[in-house]
Length: 88
Image (cartoon, rainbow, N blue to C red; front, side, top):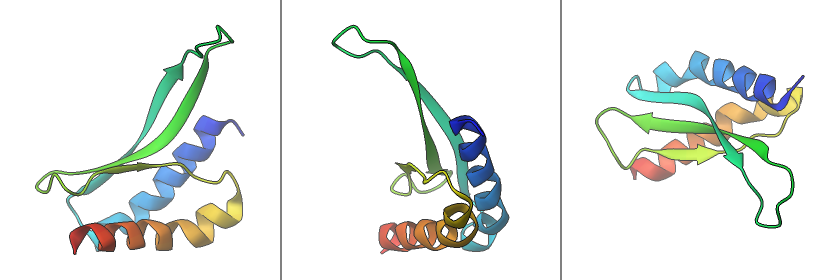
């Protein structure tokens, strides 16, 4: 799997539980092309970006671990913890 595939898979996993956490919270895969200062080869980075349609304080980006255990068993708790910390 490519990094993009892992991030897409994580996004799909998050979309299953996100409505029960907050129906106005959205997630998408964001990419950015990095050009190193040392003129090395450009590369693309990936992240999950979260945004909320009514609360500008509820936005963040995060990286993921590209493995099944993380996506299937840890990701929901991590996203939930971040969300709860930001609404307090």
